[in-house]
Image (cartoon, rainbow, N blue to C red; front, side):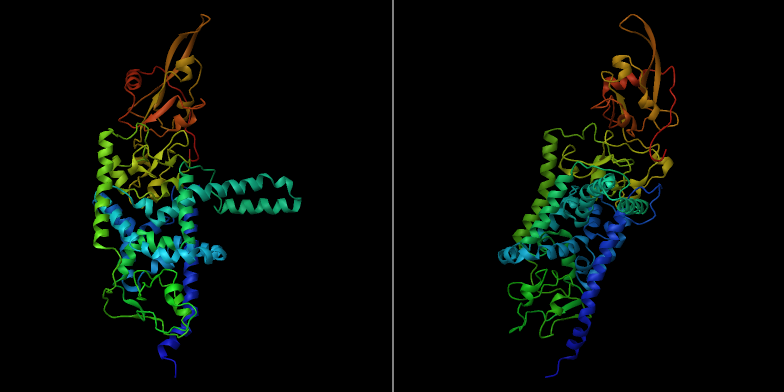
Length: 557
């Protein structure tokens, strides 16, 4: 019997479709890595490339940020386009665009020798996890509605960016510089090649701008390691059963115009492995029914169909399929309750412990109030990646559970460069506003206060005005007060004592960063409403009789 025309047509196109999907996957992977490399200081205070474009394409991040902020965020307009395209093509974003899914496909190839032993029992029980992604989606959205951000802990793009920022980038810099430092052990002809290669990579920003360290790197590595380890249980376990973004796109795909046919496994399939066991996304239920919300258009089922009956067809009217999504009514109610209970429980615990933001929890320049900032922040890590001094670090639990992985300034690690506005340029939600340079230079992050018990001039009558010399403000927020002091041997000495003018200080933290003392600095930056009262009184009312001289320092000064 002659083969159906549509089957011959799809069979002819199959190699092209699968090859195209792989090329597109690789292209998006290269693009996101290139944008990651562009998310850095490149001798300019302006970033020309749209480095946050993938976050702006993320419907889950968009919905969560806008629900929490109670406002429309224009930068997320591309996410609406992704949902509209999903209504046409189905869950293409997960199979063709998402870097986490592509990375898991590559990991699957590397793990293939051991998968036949682990996935034999894993696939048997993993399908029971199908409703979990929808439950997590409900929890994330309800928590956002309750002004409690959770999207940054589960969003694949946030996980991806933090992993590359906190783990891969610092390791990459250390390894490349270590190779160059030991080139003297290599033959002369090879030393030249290594040096030229390193120079090329530095000039083209393939190597980071400088060394970086991040406090939550091990936690981030553990999370990504768990996602990779789940690949041993079932292929694309994260994408199938846990990813809330995949759950949102899957629900939208139930109304997509592009449909896979037939809608059931064929009886008497001649293939050695039928579609149910072959599909990387588990797009068939136990009864052999096709689930469009799970399909990511990988085209494997078409390529491996020995009867050439599998195909995709555009239907003129999109209708939802009759197969259930798997989330029961009890599961939905449980997810709704969990999404509401988590914020309430955290607020009750915070109120019981009088949990105010720590006095040293400094947010990036221009950030609104603590609650508003956390509601908009999706923990994408873009601001920490672009910070040229490595001063922006991921917060732990010092600001409460709601602040986990959110950025805060740690001046002893790195200060806020006076002329830099990069963090506001890369923030996709506006949690850190894109301030003009002149406005940013007047924006107060915190207030510095001197610890007289540690400061060398105050405590030991020794000359030191390092903090004043590095203050970048033209009028110097750190001034010197001339005082005649009596030394232990009876001699007198003219000594300049540093004081902070709280009317000028913006809390950039360079004074704390450059303080020459070991350990804790003698000058600390506090939240502007939390400056120690004794120090505030002393420094606010002491009028300086002499001014020091110096210039601000930093990559842009």
